[in-house]
Image (cartoon, rainbow, N blue to C red; front, side, top):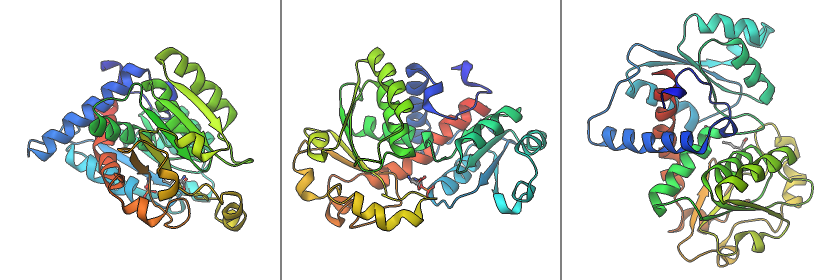
Length: 310
Ligand code: CP
Ligand code: NVA
């Protein structure tokens, strides 16, 4: 994986199945070493800039802690405090920051912004969530599934809810890693058709598959993994009320979960809205692995940073 050095991490779409597997294996290895008190510091003296245009708990803390553990330093940069917030161009921002930093992580709205930043930057750019995708979360999620189930290929993952950034990255990951994925979303909230087509193309090469349905029961049937996310993502808060109506019947609760495999894993990227997309009982239940997922953000992103910036 010397080939990962200097690359951007904008989406799983840009990574081969082998490269994704390499990152997951590296994450598991770094996790083991960190827990054994044998933390590696391949990024000693290096710096990561973290641009945030949206709120964050997990992404901010895990990137900052991860960079520290790898021997480097991370800078929290709120978009509004940067000249970017006053109209300095993405290009000039990228060029300038590349003179100081060894990598840039950005969380923003338009995916275009991340692409433009990567184009202007001479250091690796990492996507910390856009309206289109959340590849760091999906990478950590598949690491978590592998740890819990001992394999990925051939498993069935069901996603119930909004066709948003999260499902896009999960679909691409499932396709690249050979999982069968079923997505149930209400009309008007389907995943992006381009991502669907691209995922299906990739799935055809790995033995995976992708099913889209309106029926949550069909999607969740015999699933090994059940995933959901909020009905109104950041930037869509104004649609909360109409979305609550559209998503009625799409809650992951005890009744729906009966159709999944008995030992299914419940997953959610968090933050969760209890009683909306998921019932309290499922979220807190014994099948739930939400905090293992959250923890693995740290280890998965350390792998990405070590591979790209090391
Ligand atoms: N899952 C996730 O990205 O969480 P934050 O919004 O807290 O970073
Ligand atoms: N889909 C959610 C994920 C948050 C981590 C959002 O974009 O707000």
